Length: 245
Image 1 (cartoon, rainbow, N blue to C red):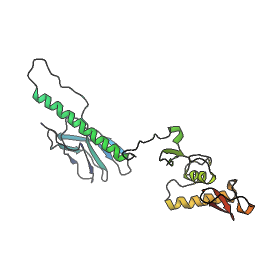
Image 2: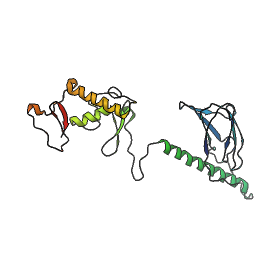
Image 3: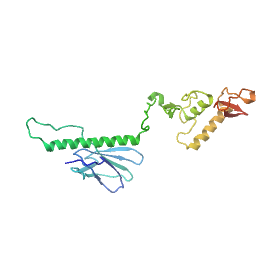
Image 4: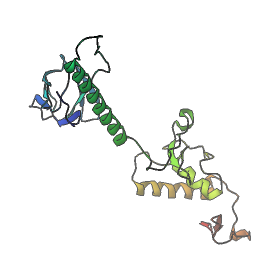
């Protein structure tokens, strides 16, 4: 027997009527797994003999997984997971056990295919950097709790208390990633607003700060203070308006 170059998983959208679904790849007894993803994203593991039955699987034509019940709109994923075991034994002076040897090779190939599919799934669901780059580790759990993921000028990840903090840190000249404003996520900017809404809220926050909510020692043209040179990206006040040189 051979093992075809086939994927070891397949997805279906349940319609509330169909119960029998093809598993179009070879699988060993007890090696089929199934999960159901509900409309709200909840993943429900299904149990063979309780939620579904299996038939076939001896060839590359595969077999059939039959549900005992169905939920319309759910996504059914059928996956093969071959037991990671090597049970083939060779006895001294016996004839070469061709059939057992081939079955062991087939099992190993099925495991390899499953690992390839698993790696592919992880790549699809993960943030990855391009080839040639090395991903830097995320901040520790305690440092990133209740904070936003941001990237510094070198593209490395950092955690910051709020997006508005980064803007204000730039304005007042503090290091990127400082949490001097002490704002928790969502206290100034909405968690799920549109980009436009975020900028509107940021504008309101800056206006409130300049109106006296927080005091910064910035050069002020009205007071005759020296104004930062053009291109320095330093902040100053002009007629009560915050500007960047």
